[in-house]
Length: 634
Image (cartoon, rainbow, N blue to C red):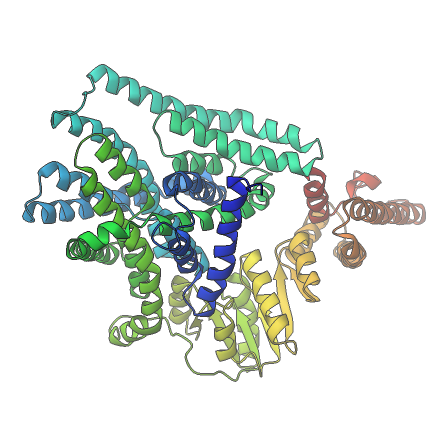
């Protein structure tokens, strides 16, 4: 009987383990990460023993972290990254140096050699980017103060890993077991690093967009997907060649493309690969836990694990207070950064290779890091169910976000209290109509409380929270959140579980409008549509049209645009038909308006309009044109 190829066997094992373990973990309320880790333990060397080459798989699966950092970079424009420079190098430096100093002191007190203490402290000071960013994204915390601070620290850790790895050969040489680096060698390494980073920045500015534009013109979606993957793989490969962090290079590439017209296409193409590879990474971490080392020295392993988690937690919680992170967010912030990180695996393996300390010590430290990554999601579940409620009750002296804990009975639920939700809420409040308002931004809640509004702290994408908010008895749900994907998630949840609710939603653009219509939401307002018409009305007046005529023109355009959007909607998934209907409708309206201007001019020798206001080509719906542009690129 012919044996199956290794890749096919392992692929079957990984997918089977994930498909079985993750839904079970989610059903138990433990989260997907714990499911992946449990799957890895089950099929790894200390479980069923179905997979043996763990390190090779771990190296391959690290690419999931690389893709994740690339997508994070795509959401962060260069101007926003520049605005974060102080938290990155300020808060990030404080976390790494503070944790490393405390851990080094503990190692010295335990009688360890200073080199072991130093490298152990530096490696354990790093945190898991994969787990932390995944949890922050799942909880919609990326835009909060704790999410921004956590992201800044994680990004600095990627940068800090470079000098940590560069230090290891020097320490090995000082111990008498390796070859040292001359000043010339070190200078050459620095120049290589600077050169590669400069090449990525200049190449991204000058080459990436024209190349992507050229590839997009081929109208071959799979090639654009291949180009997106090639971009990330190529930059990761370049970074490895000069000894830099792959994740850091991918992040820089994402930032350079954050304000490009291809950002959304790149996100859509890479997102599925990121999810699968991140899952594989967590499975590989589960497989990498060396239970043999744990069984040989259980007391020592427990002491290392508890010691470094407790020491980091104290430093990080203190730092959270110093940078004034809201106290509701401090426990999660502390736990996510207290755990060990995937880069520690690389540091400790390299340290053993450079003879900084024995392989047995490296195994102990790697085991402690892997265990911390395993128990952190479990501790997060315990924190959610027990500690956070008690913590909130104890902190009565500080202004706190009012969590929605008792069932509400208002007929209207408003999800989101930003600039859009505030206006809706104020109109209803002025009419004496009760509402239940939800928002997951602590900063926004503080502003609302300052002006006397009662807003509950909560994420409307959670089914249990919508039930407590009274969705089963309410009449109307206003989806006023700023994030398009989150608004779609809320609308889908409401449609599935509360079909009686009338949903009134905001749409960022026509694409978002179409997706809401796909979910059965018909009462949708494009957020800039009415204000844009008002601006157009003002411009027409400034060009000499009487106010009544300007009003008539803008109202005609409004009616036409709404009707055209309804005509286009059934075809929004058919590129050719969608474009044809859009262009036909736009041209018909332009021709009709041109005829009316000509008829008015014939009846009135003055013309009644600004002489330069003419030509059918001058009338165009900007959102419609933008949607067509997006389709043309696919």
